[in-house]
Length: 116
Image (cartoon, rainbow, N blue to C red; front, side, top):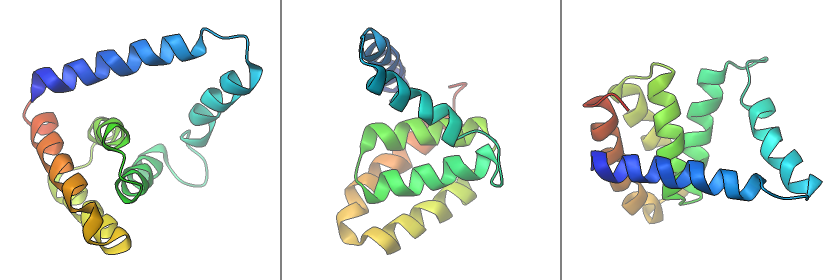
């Protein structure tokens, strides 16, 4: 899975570069808004990343789950904390989230057992 995760990260970075290679101010502003929203404020960046993880699971976006899990691990969340966050996602999203929770469990294992 580590190799697949590295491929995901490279694909995401390449895709972001391609997306930003535009004259569209709307695209550039929307992408820039991400940095603003996840910056420390009344809520810490760490808290916001966990919120992003739960929202991504409920919305059933594995790429987003992987991104937010990577950020959550970088922010210092433990496996137990991430598992609890995923339990909230399952409660909010229902059984349709189970395949994405399985995906998240594998990603968590990969991230916590490597230097990603």
